[in-house]
Structures are given as C-alpha cells and as structure tokens.
Image (tube, rainbow, N blue to C red; front, top):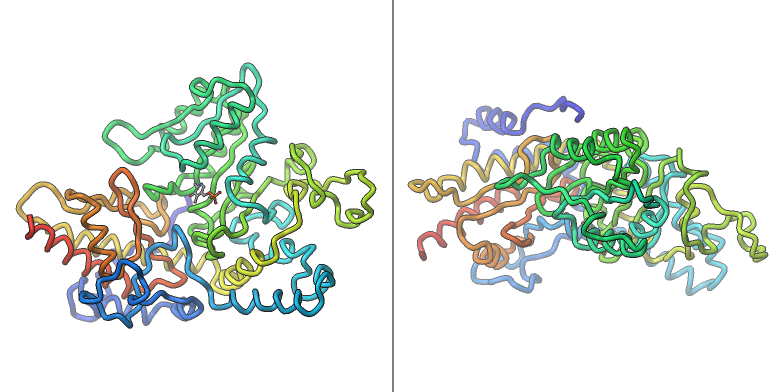
Length: 465
Ligand SMILES: *Cc1c(COP(=O)(O)O)cnc(C)c1O
C-alpha cells in the first residue's frame, strides 16, 4: 500500500532512550513520548473509566482512584464529554417546541443525519453524496447486498473470509438463501494457509483471478476483527473489478482507525458502525457508502419515504422521486438522539484529523509491540515456547491500532488477571486477547503500564504452575 514516510516505531523508541540515557523499557521513554504528543489534549475530551468503577476490579491490587487502562476502543469507544451537551440541546428543543424541532436549530430533525455528513466524509474518503448515516451496520449490509448481489447462473458466488465476523457470515448466508442458492456452493470462503493466522494477499488475489468469473460480490472486512489485519483494500478492489465483480467492505474495525479513500479506490459499496473507534455509544448510528459511479444505476431494493427527494417528500403524493445514490437507500426518519452522540465524536475527529491520528497510532501500537517483545519474550527464558505471541501483522501497512495476543498458557487466566488490575481489553475465541491503544484517548504511559502489568501477570502465572 502507500509507503510510510515515518521511521519505524522501534527506531524512534531507541533514539529517545539514547537521548534520555536510559533503557528503552524505562518509564521515562513513555513520559517523553506523551510530552511530545500533539494529540494529548484530546484525552481530556473523553470520560476515562476509573479503576474503582470496573466490575471485575480487585481493589487490593490497584489504586482505586486511578484511571483504568482502556484498550477496548476497537469494541466500544469511550464517551466524549460533548455527548451530554449535544443530547441536552435536542432534549431541550423537544421540551420547548415539540414538533417545530423538525425544522429549526443546529440539527433540524428532518435533516439531522445530513447535517453531520460533512464530518464523516474525510474519515472514509468519500463525497458527501456517496455516504448515508442510517440504521445499524448489519442492516446496512443487508440493504446494500439486496442491490449489489444479483446472482446469475454463471456469476453467483460471494467471496468472503472464512473467519468473517458472525453477523457478516449470517448476513451473507441468508442473502444466498433469499435467492434460493446452495449456500455451500455459493459462499466462497477463503482461509489462511495451514498453520497460519493471517491471510496472504497473494492467496486472496489468486482466488479472485481463478474464480472471479463466478463471483458476483467480494465482501471483505477492512480490518479483520480477530487478527487486526488491515487488508489491502485498493488491491482487492482493483483485482475484483477487473474480473467483473462488485467489491464491498465492512469497515467496522477500519473506520476511525486507519486512513480510508473509498472514492479514490473505486470501492463499489461499504458499510460501518460508529460505536467502535467512532465513539458514538452502543448501538450508534451506522454508515453506508455507494460509489458515485453507481448513483443512477444501482437502486435500493427496499424503499421508504426518506429515500424521496426532500423538496417534494412532504407533498405526500405517493409518486416516488428517488434520491440518486446511497441517500435513496434511507428508509425512515433519522434517530436524532443517535445523531447527537455521533456528532459529538465526529467533531473531535475533525479537530484531530484522521491523518494525525493515524500517525500517532502507528507509533503508539509500534511502542506496544516493541515493549511486549522486550518485556514478555523473556518469559520463560529457558523454554522454546514464547509466552506471548503477537498474531497481528508486524508491518505498519498491514494493521491499525489493535494487536491480538496469544499465550502459551490458557488465555482465560491471563485475561482474568488483567481485568482484576484494571486493564480493559477482551478475549476472543479461539485463543486471542485483543488490545487496542486508541490514539484519541490512550497515552504512551497507558501502554507502559499495560506491559508492566502483563509481564507481572505472566510471571506470577509461571510461578504458580
Ligand atoms: C462489530 C461488528 C459488527 C456488528 O454489527 P451490528 O450490526 O453493529 O450489531 C458486524 N460486523 C463486523 C465486522 C463487526 O466488527
């Protein structure tokens, strides 16, 4: 993908250590990195959970007033403080003027979703007309597939990852069934080579090259939810389209995490949720993208009144004037309270910019990787079996914030010990623990503290054995 102008995170860490005349694992390195971090003020825009409020915490092991180490922004982003303000604005409007709120104020309810499109477009790299904010992620995936997946006797397959997120898997399975297709024959799943965790680009491209003529739609994630692998979206798009396939992406773990250029890459369609890296709160308003080139060709299969042009929508004459492009896919009026929380978060992204966030993220996650390798690979020193393995690709171009760790001891033990000490992360079957330092609100000191805790947990688990 794009070559990185940055120096490798490990080199940066070593240079700072040399400058400070200390070991690279010294706490002073983390503090120095935080001091130099231009995005540091954004941490104060969020509520950071306190140790004492976490359900699994063991108060004998932590200082209860300290901040938790929240590394789960890949699953549920933290709450921007501005959410309350924005919600309150609309609650007040509703209280004071009832239905007049549809037409007036900062976010007239009828066009509330449209009022924040300008803040979303740069995050996914699209024109405003190419994106819509509506529904939830899986609902949008279904709506898009209903229009893009038109199987014929010759071209009837959907290509996806074998370990796709369950909702995507079920979504595709049920779409195939809707067309009366044989799921086993039509659901073309691609899995990593024997003994490997990560899909190789060359293998993906080979399947497309060999079977592309029978593939109707390629649906990949942008960033794999389990391994954290960032796929080469432009290359998959190009290869798929050269074979006549539609190419779409589920960006749940990519949006707000890595740079996206959906328009320039020529991606056909995409969808994403907003409660992960985009911090809109559980069940937040999701997004959908349909490339401009399809605006007048690909129509929604299911239509509602919010797909009708605004200028004549309220004539109520039942003569559909469909909005071209993805905004014609909107079915219902927008949920104003969900718009508020998303608006609050997108406002922060506008200030921070996705470019600067990605730059910090590369260093932050690189620092995490470097520290884990230095600290935790020496446990146990005398066996060949490393205690921690990072299964996420080590190349910057192939990953976002998240690292997925596996252990040579049961992950459940490690996970529970981390939780008791105020580390918020998650475990995923079969054997991974996912940690995601998020550049908007995580610090280098968070990473430092996490690695210290992880090392001590592994140490004590070793001794108990
Ligand atoms: C988080 C996630 C989902 C969740 O779907 P919802 O419809 O928002 O519940 C779906 N797919 C992927 C790839 C995800 O990461």
